[in-house]
Image 1: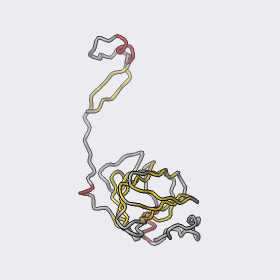
Image 2: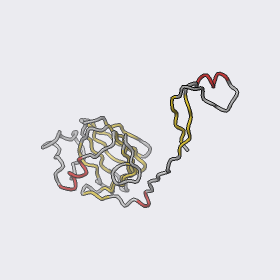
Image 3: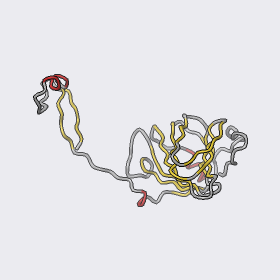
Image 4: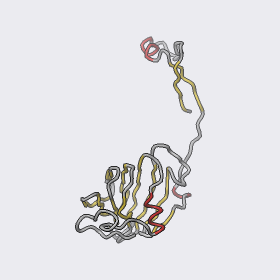
Length: 180
């Protein structure tokens, strides 16, 4: 059950004898409203595989059952030894949270190692890439906002993703090469 507050010209009936609480919510009427529970279950979301050796399952946004307005969220598995979210940028801010595995994150001109339990913030418009450098799959959760489509998924599938150092800024020195 969700509570919705509405302005009213009358004192709310709060169901208690505390005058300070009654004064605090004076002018607000509380109305109960039913909402549906929507669940995204990874076991039931097929997801999509990409040429850079990753599999993405949308949890919120895209083809997911949950359609949030302010953000998108998903589960990504990068194959061992090189699976990748290739060099790209977009207007949304984003966070990657590593559930398991080890990878290299390139963010603008910086490069760093990420592992289980770590998260990285990706500002809007900044080029970034995540590559699995380990011997086992890397699993991560992404969350970006505002909600909406990001072109790099389509570009990767169509083979039109901008190439680092050619159509896009160069990767940081020593970085894993862009795979798609």
